[in-house]
Length: 173
Image 1 (cartoon, rainbow, N blue to C red):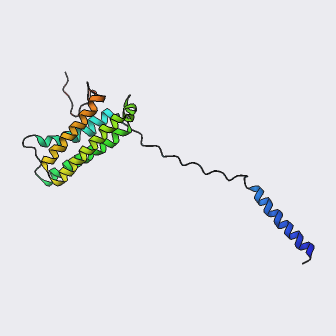
Image 2 (tube, rainbow, N blue to C red):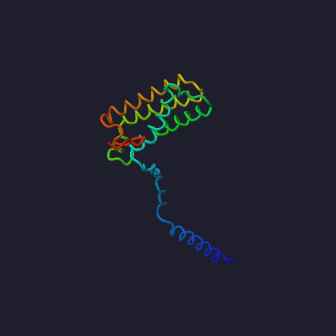
Image 3 (cartoon, rainbow, N blue to C red):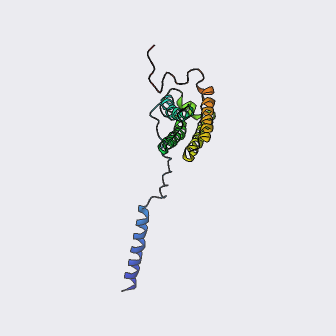
């Protein structure tokens, strides 16, 4: 191969590389910023959740304190454990807000979160007591659940706790 042919091929190769480089954008496109996934969207009001998924398991846990209603079988204890787990889970759920007119405002307040976390802690204690089949510890945890409920209701719903919703149908007046 002659020197001029080698030189021509070299120039052609360098030019091709230059053309390929020109096809690329001047700057690499910045990677899109990671966007946090949107959180779950509440489908019920906090009031509805409280009546249906807080009152229900709470009432069933407190029922053990009535004469003749202490748990007797492994199944009774297991159901109490389930109710405690439901109640603790509801404490997390109500912190997401709801569809009610003041739900998102409430759920953003530190007092709301503190009361919800207090309920979670008390419900976890109830679950531990139910797993251990320890009635005195369950009764103590039940009192802590009541304290959590009252701390929240004093601030957020002092006059009309259920907003007209009830766990059991109310007789017409």
